[in-house]
Length: 325
Ligand code: SAH
Image 1 (cartoon, protein in one colour):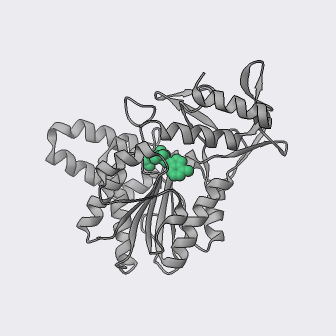
Image 2: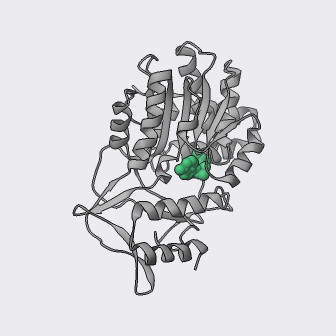
Image 3: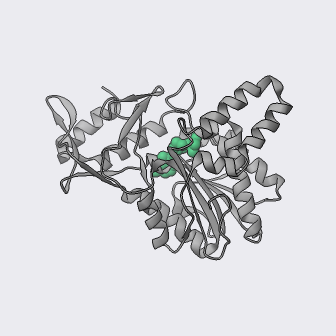
């Protein structure tokens, strides 16, 4: 039994069955604070860890938005859940060469990942919460952050809980599921509020669906494969599909402008990732196979190209972002 499972069983004994939201929150807090989960030796691989081109395209998009937003000198680069800091390093390289010299602010709760980010991004400032970000124009990116935030599940209007049954952790009910994520919506609202009042843009990149729909999307990933959700609490990554319709509504309610949702592959192609791949392959012929494989993983509709989507929001005072229409 994992140490977290022991604690959760104690809690259920004391409080009664706990919500899926409480379970997911506890599991992910433990999971991320005790390991570096990324890459071949870990549990899963994210887009910035596949290829430097991903972060470079994000950097190009943010640099362009900053330039057309009038290059406010106090604008900062802000990232939510930056993982190893790879995306920030690749994006900032492009942004710095475009003249951006603002500060770097990272919202990260995991002490282990903060340690790794410190090596990649020694100049950064760290925060526990979005509310602690400086009140300045923001250039925000969050890749695979929203999917890790806890969801609530409802079956016939009754909230689904985790209990102990026959000696094992078990869900208290099954059936047609409705998922809501107040925590996720609050995070998007907090960013949207800042962007709409101080200026700036935000990119949320994640896997999910364009329209709210019924269904159970809670999943666990361990060592690059799916695992039973209630197995090994705290030792596997729990995520759910992002309901982009709900997220867009949250952003609009905080007065941000919302760009049309675009699949990741399409967006990266519009930003010129294929040209970037060709130029990388030309200057590093020995790496051309790796560059092409990375490109395909990011843009192919059978891989990450279609399932992952890019949601961009911007301040009403800033022009719309390019690559979304
Ligand atoms: N963006 C990175 C990592 C994605 S994994 C990449 O693309 O590689 C999720 C990240 O969000 C991790 O860095 C994790 O520690 C962080 N995280 C999860 N829940 C969080 C929370 N509530 N507040 C801040 N960071 C959180």
